Image (tube, rainbow, N blue to C red; front, side):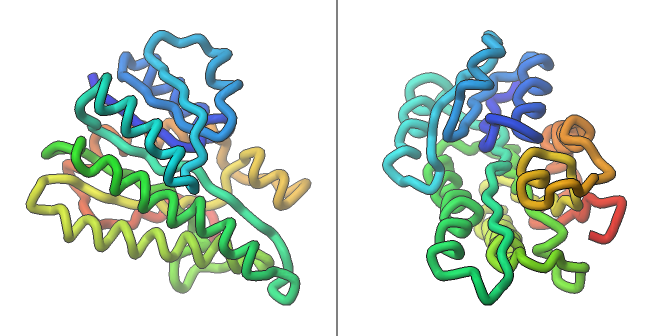
Length: 226
């Protein structure tokens, strides 16, 4: 039985992941700005917290819960994401900052706050995007999103090196297009080849076993390009 933190659990992949881990009898801390949907599950293995990971003060809620209840964390899945779809000439510094605050700064801040609770054998999985992979085909309009996803890849590679002596593994899954609400909002009418439930199943298994074989790696999880 693992103690698992998952961000972005109000819908899509994060919501499906929370259910998978809880139904497999793992303890889940489900983090999202809006915890209403996850609370409706009323699952005994899920603790839901309304947390904005881009807010350092809000992250203290996670620290308080873990320090008082779990004492240790086995798996963190950084799934929360923000996407802005605008032509490059229309995107501004505020757009960039808002995306980066969730996709990179929030990941860094939450990880930093949990380092004292991560033990040897812990696994930190960051959900990135094929848009952050150098040389991959890019979607126009995603300058902020794709660049942030490239940044979080580099962060994870660095942390894998910095904490390898402690036995904490950091890996990245760079996903191709997945049929989620966020994708539909950004690209109305586009149909991705993979469902949120299918991708959640893959991430679930990788989070539990991937650190036995990988550390500091970026795995491209896509049946298309991107």
